[in-house]
Length: 300
Image 1 (cartoon, helix red, strand yellow):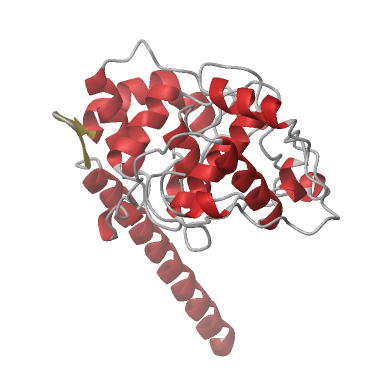
Image 2 (tube, rainbow, N blue to C red):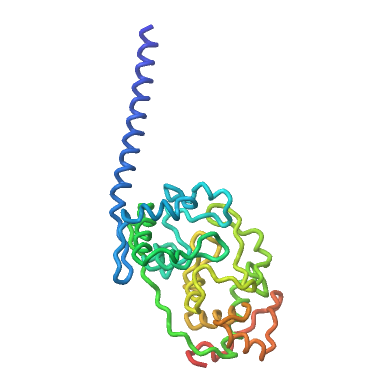
């Protein structure tokens, strides 16, 4: 009888300790949450405060991104692509190296720009101050922002003149880097690897289709496209090429990618050059052609 009583006492004591530990952990988490509501964001002349964005987050963001910022809002189950999980501190659109935190301005641009091919809209109804406050609120969901700084912005050199040699050099790089395996030889997102791709949470993900006319996720300008493949899209199979591609070569690739897109305000010259050249899709079975010498030394 005494042994049974002692065992019961030990079990009750262990259970009590576990319960106290769980309560203590929950309290600490709540404390950390309150502390992180002091998070700030700085964009230009604006200073954002997380605490000031709570009402706008509940009104505009919680349905998709969830109360905890984990991407599990009540609408998330019907969305493709899935909402961003802010607790991971991982973002696609950055001007910083892969694996580092984005700048406040990067997040501000994402809030203001929205994302084509998703339900994330352009939040025109929000003031600049509202957006910067929301940036601070997004940051407060991840402890990374309390222990790490944003990565150092990598420089983007001045955009050179578009020439036929640069377009051809960009096509050679498209083949050499095997971009076609995901994006397809015509940029239609139908490469041999396109149906096997998954994001970092093991969810199916499709490569960008250059031919459909939608805006790239992280912006429409040549500089935006340059940043996309030089920084990579964290959380996706799209890697960073900053260690494999020289800045001058990166501009060549931008110019070639422009030839794959439908005619728009950004690619008039590139499409005209492609037409002049009679540019054909690459042959993945052929050796990658050498880049024209003129493309590697600044202005051709």
